[in-house]
Length: 179
Image (cartoon, rainbow, N blue to C red; front, side, top):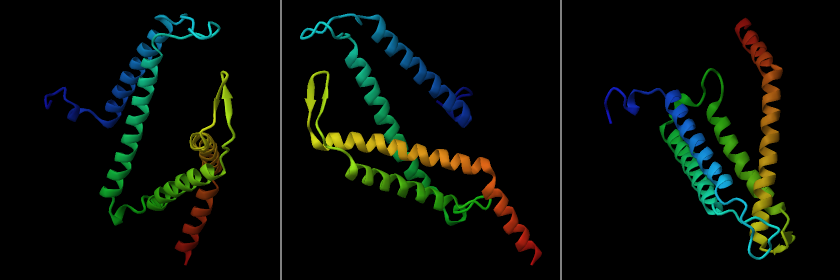
């Protein structure tokens, strides 16, 4: 579609805003249907639990969103690495290439360390025992990696807000210009 109203005429912000609106609308519809259609159906084996009719719809919706997010993340990283040239290693005196590779290395190291240190102890949920060691460690890996990356992000924001890097960078530039 290449008319006046085509996607090629929209800015990146407009496209992302429209995608956000579509995703929010889909989430409202799916979760609204989940809670409004057959939510109070008792579970056959244990009537104390609910067995909503549209549980599968919610699960499929979440799986599709996670798969699309992962796919788009991989594509975005691949395209940015492919389209990057040596001139873009630093932008405005910021080592963007080093930051990108450091972030990828931190993610990989966090995933590896948290998987190796994750617990494989069996867990009982709703009376059902889960003892698959791989999936127990994988679950711990994702939870603990989230905590690690959130902690790093909070430290990065705090450091950025403190102005320490900007002040030391300004001092270095002033010292270089004096010489």
